[in-house]
Image 1 (cartoon, rainbow, N blue to C red):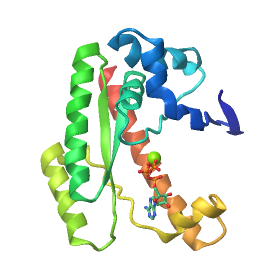
Image 2: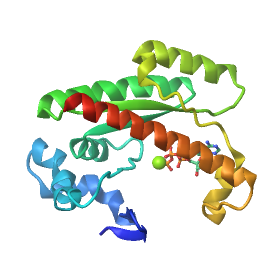
Image 3: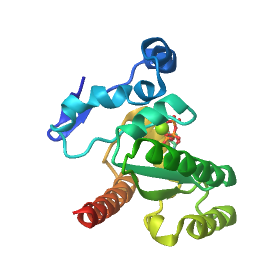
Length: 192
Ligand SMILES: Nc1ncnc2c1ncn2[C@@H]1O[C@H](COP(=O)(O)OP(=O)(O)OP(=O)(O)O)[C@@H](O)[C@H]1O
Ligand SMILES: [Mg+2]
């Protein structure tokens, strides 16, 4: 159900009944492989129509994560600067590796994107330094998303571009997008 937002941008909205996805899988599949590839099969017919499909995955659902991952070529991990995110990311990558091997997915982690909880926090700096050591500096986005009050207002008013606070947020996410595309190009060219 892709819905056109603007030229070149379509969205597949979620719905409250998606909450039942795990239960749905258990009732409608009878082995682990069918369960893990259910979404991928649904996505296949529309894949050719798009350059990039981004799947925004909620935290904590094993079934959703596995289905998203089996549908994907790349994984971007957002890393909030708090200790449990670091261990979370480590566990997550371990899970990815298992899926990657089990199904021969050819998955690539395109990078970890740091999102600061506090802009001048020493903990935040410490987490990023630690992440560089654990995952390798080249795997950490050099663009960092800072805390920006305006983003909270976007939840209420929608995304606007009226003043310099709006522009600051949009500029930052443009940087994130540019770095993502650069990284994707790097891996795409490496493969070919
Ligand atoms: N860089 C930021 N600066 C300030 N507030 C932010 C920032 N990023 C996100 N937020 C606020 O935190 C809320 C949650 O952010 P986001 O939806 O990106 O997180 P999430 O982990 O994907 O959450 P969910 O589980 O709801 O999907 C946003 O609605 C926004 O109000
Ligand atoms: Mg989210």
